[in-house]
Amino acid sequence: GQGVGVRGFGTMTLSEIFEYMYNHYGVVSPLEIQKLSRQLDQPWNPNDPIENLFKNIEDTALFAIVANKTFMDHSLITAGKCAIMGTNLFREEMREYNRQNPHGMED
Image (tube, rainbow, N blue to C red; front, side, top):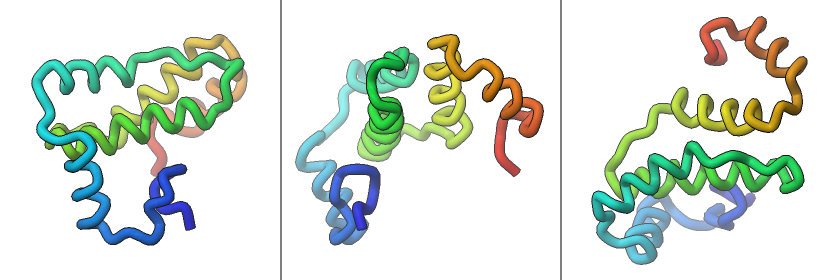
């Protein structure tokens, strides 16, 4: 399997994944943490594959682990929804989703 996203971590143990991230990202500065937070607010270009949006969210979540900064799952979901809603595409689908999930989260 691919493991986490498109990274190919499927054959690595969890400790190997963390070691890989630490070796590639090292100690995270306050400016990098600020950049991490802003990254979630980046719009998605609907001309790009939706996988780009998912990768941005996944990269942010993985980097947050290394930075020891917690993003709640609902924050990541909200960021994805906002990026999609910002395109003004999928309006009906988002309305239907919100009707089925009035609190914004899956049960």
